[in-house]
Image 1 (cartoon, rainbow, N blue to C red):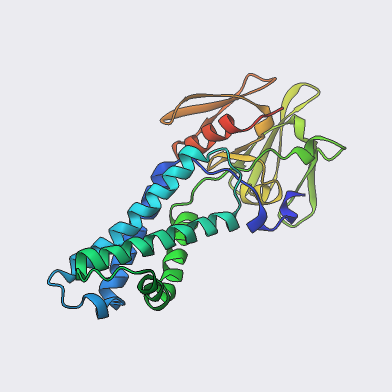
Image 2: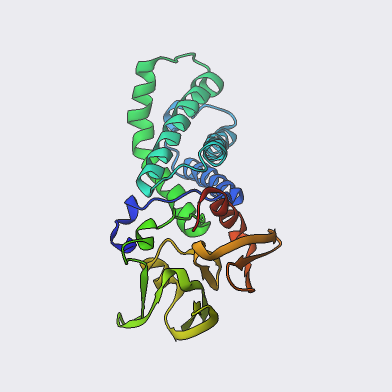
Amino acid sequence: MDNVIPNYKRCFYLSGDRKKYWYSSFFLGFFVALILIGLKPFEKSIIDHPYITLVRIGVGFICSVVYIIGYEILLNWFKTTKFNYLKLILFDVFLALISVVLIFLYDRLIVVKDGLVTFGFLMEYILILALPFYPIILFIFHFLKTAVFPIQIYLPSAKPYLSGGKNILCIKEENGLDGFRLNLNSLLYIQSQDNYIEIHYLKDGDYTKYLMRGTLKKILKDFSFLLKVHRSFIVNPYKIKCLEGNSNKAAISFKDVAISIPVSKSYYSSVKNYLSTNTKI
């Protein structure tokens, strides 16, 4: 099953919801400036500057701009590239390195104005000042992306479920007991109903549903290729017919049955990107 794959190795595509990247990058810069103002880690090199607070705000601004531009590049030019969390963290480290270089140039050429810009001094700057400080920055940015402004990511098609008899889904109760089994090709969507989930599917071509105890969180953990389109709905991507409407009022219609469900504004971009980058049965 999909859930036996370690989280850091699971492949996914990046969401197109730019606002969340912008929010995360903006607050990253805010926290960088706040840490600099509070802890003053760069005080040794720029303590005599008359506008020291503005200087530290400038450092935070550089961090925000670098991360915004970095993720804009990913969303524009690499939106069909598969990622996993390890690759994404390495990309964040790469952006952190670019930030350090720009902050070094900012410090030497604009703040201190001593013109001391050499590779050796840059390496000293990275090892002594940036290296102890930037793990905190990376942790803050990762926390913002995953917890405060969670970026909607979506996984590529789960082809192993479509062949060799592996397309039978066993949806379990919260206590781990078998709850309901059905063919993936029959599943339409699953809706949250308080402490229950309602499974909507086709049986002999007829639309029907089944109520059982469970949560959408547990379903997504067991079958991570299913697509969340609303806080109360996850869908079988193979049964999507089309996405209708815009971000303010969108809905998904299904193959083989005349029903539709809403797509919330916060999930609209990721759903739209999923449909544009995946080939479904």
